[in-house]
Length: 435
Image: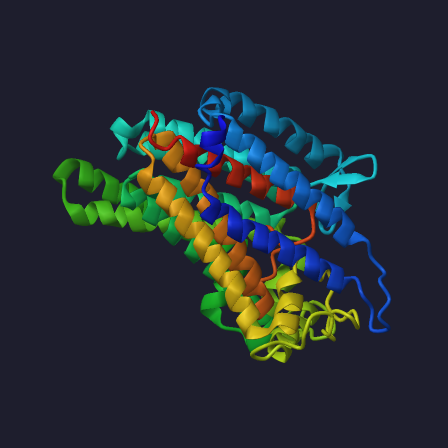
């Protein structure tokens, strides 16, 4: 890249990223101070190193033609699965999920696998644009995403696995995949969530048995319902193939959603660990276990509410300095920020993410390369999903999933993966008129 091309970098994209990185360093420093004013953590020093390294990665990728990753996409994807499998089998559990240890350093491999998934998915979608509506195209997209997602889910890391689904839905929608398939995925996941939560709501909050909900916890009845739905789907499929009537098609469609959702919700009850189940329960009502699983949400909401309009002032927060917030430099960094910077400070963070999303959307619209467009769509989804889920869980409107607030939360893996996306976006921006 020449000096003239360096001047063409999208600084409107880079500026909010730098601001968020600085916010992260400042409030990680604040999270390490006790009520006595003693600094007990050096996490902010590591964050400075990781943020600086992330900037180097982003600028280095901006110098490289992003199209090189097109040819290497399959190899990057397959290579990224190896450490993911190794982590699943051999790595030890840290913070309720598995981390790859290299000496004293811990690497969350799943953060980097998201990059390889986005790149390979973008290549496949770009190569198959002529068959944009075909079911086979959507099926291969699901295979690309569900293989690493399944490994991540077994680690167990429910929060990160949800990011893969969001990426799949966003990128396939952007690529013009038939809305029937996208709607099937969205409807099935939404219904699976409802079917998973209802028995928990009955047992821990309603505390009264309802026959309709109790059915959802009985394996034999679930199997009978699934068989009944499959029979209906088979008859409707025969009717559709013979008579070509639309209502037969929608009967098959609805039955398929119901079968998929029942199966997923039942499997989730078998896979989910006790602490993950409790996270869903306290999301519905934190006061079910106020001194246990509900503690994080209650203290986080308290911290955000205590910030008021303008906040208590930098280094003046009480929730973090009295150590009321667990994982305060990672999952709940926004809670600390809001207590000390207030509602207005929170609006600035919202604005920074909005600018990042709009700049990525602008790059998507102006690039003439389909591969580049889909890469930007994938990373835009990743940033937005992390932001919405992390900030939502600190406010108590989303379940606690352990998803970091990208650019601000403490952790090298999340910063490096997020800055890799920014670097590729900068590279695309410079070359957006080239094909």
